[in-house]
Image (cartoon, rainbow over the protein chains, first blue to last red):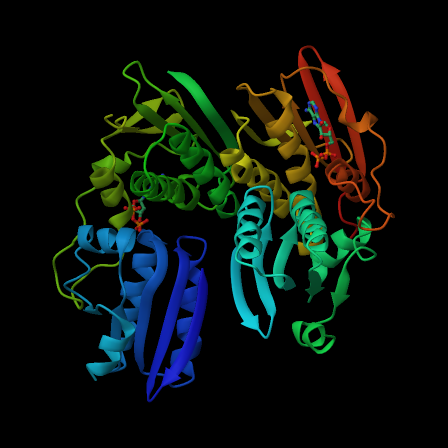
Length: 110
Length: 110
Length: 140
Length: 140
Ligand SMILES: Nc1ncnc2c1ncn2[C@@H]1O[C@H](COP(=O)(O)OP(=O)(O)O)[C@@H](O)[C@H]1O
Ligand SMILES: Nc1ncnc2c1ncn2[C@@H]1O[C@H](COP(=O)(O)OP(=O)(O)O)[C@@H](O)[C@H]1O
């Protein structure tokens, strides 16, 4: 999985690309720790280039949501499609995340 | 392997990323055919993000060089490092390509 | 079952992709579409990661995969280990409805596999845990 | 040889990555560094692509890989097929010096494997072609 970030205002936009699986998810967890330690509090995680997510990836996203909420931060997801959308539906993840069609719409909402 | 292109003057800069192996090389061959059919004649193939090349990749690059030369076109390579550099050395490919340290240096040479 | 492909490797995370690709390779050969292959990919990961993470406690062990077609021409994937007996299908359904604060982390892997595959079975055969899932052949 | 990992799949390009990753998984477990793993990756691809492309003519067949440690603790990788007898090591060295116009396309795969691996052997055992390469264990 490729992880790219860019800062827009006080929001860190994180783009995930490729496979978020049991091999790659721990890298995301490590990055999140770095970002929050550096003081980041508001996140958009854009999944439009994510092709695959397994329960290991869901675990990382859920754990991120809990950590960010505990810090009174904000987490939005955007760009879900295909297999990622299907897995989110099956897991009931639509009801626990703020989800936008695109990164742009997520940015406009704040 | 990811293939990205951008046009700079009359040169098509092609960036290869990831693995150029027996699975991915045929895709490159197909793209080359499209580019030459569309009239492209001058190429820089930037390998700075290429992590791996096998003989199947070498075959595609050599075949590209022969085709482009037959059309009186120009082919430059740039950004070789690590494993790609080692495989080029073992195969004697340094003597048959014009090779530059970076895409910028290749562009400056014309 | 006529085996199409087999792999036996140490149950370690660095072998996860080899294991998964052995399974998706079989599925590709059977002509399943991209979407179904993605679901097989996911189900395979879920089953395999459990073996890798839990079957041998902290110790070393192996995991085997056999793919093949059954008499009806459907794809069968058999994943087995020689760890302590553990029926992964006997677990309760995970929480998929509560809000963020109450939502438990984990337990979704097996649930997804059960939802996506056509039939999932656990058997203890001699000293092995054998998990089998079946993918019905595509209708022409 | 104590087998660390084994895989047997149809000799098809969609199984190439599963085969290669079975081999590099063994190498990782033995603690080889990134550079050496890359060389093993390349050598494995070269040997396997030949089996996939040529061993069975246009027909179907299987390819097996066994990785293990020999008595000296070095990694051995054995790649075998049941195609027509063909000693891949008997070929002439390819052209690595002539200029573009004269440079022949192809023939580099086996050459690279021979250059990079510590020992490469071909044997015909019963009805199988068996190619073995050895990677000396890293010195501490
Ligand atoms: N092979 C196994 N041996 C022993 N325990 C297992 C095995 N597989 C799974 N478990 C147990 O079942 C639980 C649920 O597994 P799973 O549904 O995949 O979710 P997760 O691994 O994300 O918690 C694990 O947390 C583990 O305690
Ligand atoms: N298993 C095999 N059975 C029959 N012929 C083979 C086999 N492997 C290789 N060959 C022959 O050997 C030639 C050289 O192989 P190789 O060095 O890998 O280069 P390349 O495949 O790129 O031409 C092939 O072109 C093919 O004719």
